[in-house]
Image (cartoon, rainbow, N blue to C red; front, side, top):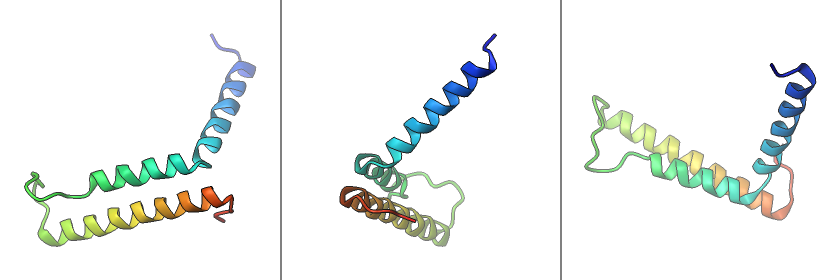
Length: 82
């Protein structure tokens, strides 16, 4: 059984790893690529999604990817997002 102090230390380390990872441009470029990859593509099976729903999903994912690329630029410049 893991004792409480070990559990707290594990959570603290993981929190810091996530925070440092999210501060890098590489992380945000990778996230942008994931959003681009998820965009609907012609010829894919889209289930029962209507053309309008596919357009909306495509726009939303495109915008998310662009936001991630912008965040990567901020990380490279060493700026703050908030």
